Image 1 (tube, rainbow, N blue to C red):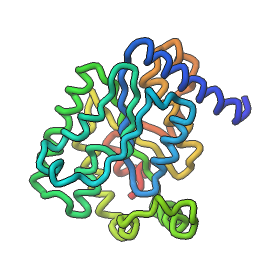
Image 2: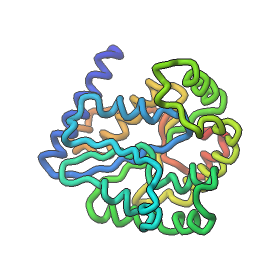
Image 3: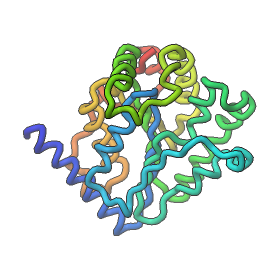
Image 4: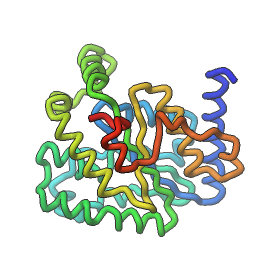
Amino acid sequence: MGKAKHDHKLQLELVRMQMAMAESGERAVVVLEGRDTAGKDGTIKAITKHLSVRNTRVVALPKPSDREQSQWYFQRYVAHLPAAGELVIFNRSWYNRAGVEVVNGFSSHAEQAQFLRDVPDFERMLVENGIKLVKLWLDIDKDEQARRLEKRCTDPLKALKVSALDAVAQEKWDDYTAARDTMLERTHSVWAPWTCVRGDDKPAAHKAVIRHLLHAIAPEEVAHDIKQPDGDVLFTFELDALKDGRLAK
């Protein structure tokens, strides 16, 4: 099967998945995390390009307001959880507290420690309430991140992607690595496991993510003939991955 035909089939199965969700009332949340330039926006576009705007929401929340900072940490995310038949994709999520906030000092050590204690129970409540929760970590190596950051600075069409945090992404690479490792180790659970995606090859990563979503969310009659994702690109997190080269150091 040619590449274009194969990609068309995966897109068609995503549409069938959403039609099945609308009929059954299934609710699904995809948490998409990763290093700066890891490909979150492109992955979301690959997933959603043929899906219904009415039943698909991409949530990318701005910096919390003073009022939101006084609330229970998870409160503003709860407001965006799906109703029947909806797919919600968080482009960064409550895991900001375990990543960006840790590295850049946007929250206290006590707040970060409480988050790591609370998040497994929070996610367990979501899953026990019937929400299908898929957590994806997009990983890239340091040289590839440097190349993509440079392209952001020189390509006018990527100007809207530039952020103040880009300037320190390489400088604080090791700090982000340590935060990632702690986050994955402390928040990986049986009911809400992390799935890691090697994102250096964008098309391969997109294909692997779509296959994974179909197997995780779609009913068996939709997903049964979809190949499993390439294990060299996408894999369930395990502690060995922090040391054996599958995740960039």
